[in-house]
Image (tube, rainbow over all chains, first blue to last red; front, side, top):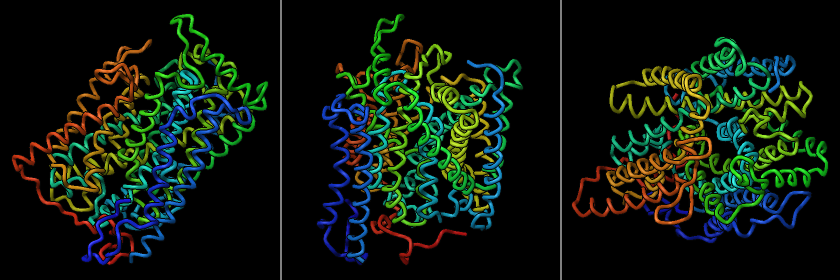
Length: 84
Length: 537
């Protein structure tokens, strides 16, 4: 995440790269990687409850992305609290 | 098409329409403040919390047209239309990165529109005007399409479309629009914010019922639905001797699928109506939290998309829909639901049209007022005058959209909306790059914008399809290759190339870069920080 710079003037003189920020960045990047690797899901099997793989897999990623975004929110909040 | 007016469906639709109209007018008194400053009318006082924002943005982005067009795309072309799902998946991580910065700098400096930010950051009225005009032009056909959504429902109910006289044909749409215009004028952004609660409740109800009930009607349930879809889509058409598609992507469609998803995701929050929803929130934290919570709507959209396959399984063909796949969802509701519940479904779509139409007209009005009227016509306009102008413009914008739909056919509205997506993405560098750096010169950004608009506009215009001689497709060959991709994204790449090259030249000749009105700390500010004043009352 690029909430930089943290110069002494604005009172936030902690590190730019923190474990929480790296973890949040991973949460943000993973959905892109999953969705743009179209070959990994462009097939019909295995189906689930009558849904071909192409459809249920992407719908599952909606839920995974929601969880990752929730995690990224908490990580950034945790990180920002440490800065103030 | 069925003939005659469906009384019960119409009655239910009118009931909900009257209900939301009442809410729309009453909204002016919600969190009452004198509606003088443009922040009040145009951004709802910049005080919306998590729940309101969730409904507002959800109601704003997942429009009635989406509920008509996405299933129609699956109905007509198969898996490629499902790009709406990866699109609405990646849009949230994408905007998680930069929207908080846009919120902070806008609140810190009182920017009402992103074009305000572009002007402050790059010190360029020209670049700001380019962003504002692109936003207005991309929004107009989008409003018109919301009317198309209402029209599709009225058609199926038996009003409009088939009526003999001009009056009986278009009167219902006129009434709907007059009411919409009136409550937007009086209540501003507070009206759609409240109506969105009704809209989303209805939509969720209808979608949940549809995905549980319809598969029980079809032999084989979901397996039967996908089987019927695959059979229909892969059967060659007697006219063209080509199959319409498949329930998975052909290898030629992989890049179009990915590029449509990426281009649409990048474009979404460049639309003025999306930005209004973000700037109206009360804190930076609210923005972030909502981005996580808004993903739920994507799940709903994915399920709505499958209504297109259900329509195939229920035996509808393009021919039986009067040649228009856009009628798939309304006709499906009409066929499978008891008439009172079909009425609820139509009300969901029609109200789903009112919310974004109101927000879009407010967003376009804000842009015109701040970045055309104040910047170029009346620099001294005070808060009261800005609000007055914005209210009048919101009426004109809606009137323009109405004329658009009545005078041109609905295909034109769709074409222009596709073009709008190509155009709006070209404002991405000026806004998003600007949130991070002033490395790119204002004139380089303007040159890139012009190149992207020119290329994208021409290529989109040149696309032919079986039924259209222009704007026939959203994807086109990438120059010097045999691979197709989303036109907006190809134009965006050209835009970036021009920005980079022009930037090197302009920096080499030391062209004046203007002064930056913002400071690095502005991009991190949150509500409660000492330098962030509460929204002006």
